[in-house]
Length: 192
Image (cartoon, rainbow, N blue to C red; front, side, top):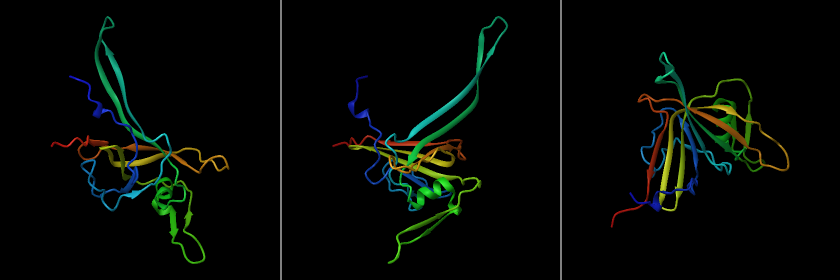
């Protein structure tokens, strides 16, 4: 098999956005190019590290008498994603990191801009659907998490040398088919 240059893809976000979140039960995408369901809300710009996917498998080896390895058992499987959300004044971002019910948004008026009132508490963050859109020239990719939950929100720093950002770790849970995530791509190489 020969090398195929078009199979090499950079992980850039689509120009229309890269990270989206929707309530559980929203229509999930099944390819990389169809427009997302209106329930998916953009999370805006994300940090320059992009999206980091970690697929973890923990195993235990079983040995026979004489120390031969006779079996390897998978004891754990987890899929997580790390992303830094940098649009800290976005209602969608505030909901993702604090919980939907903990964010009250008030639209701009003639006397004040858009406002957010956020309650910070120990309430468990809800499960939701996530999608990450990636594009490189004619190529498109989409990562879809049918059931995911923000597990951690890293340290948030307020200073004059950096933007206010929310580094989050998202746990992907298996859906009814046993899949924690779906990856779709289109190499953009159409036939003549």
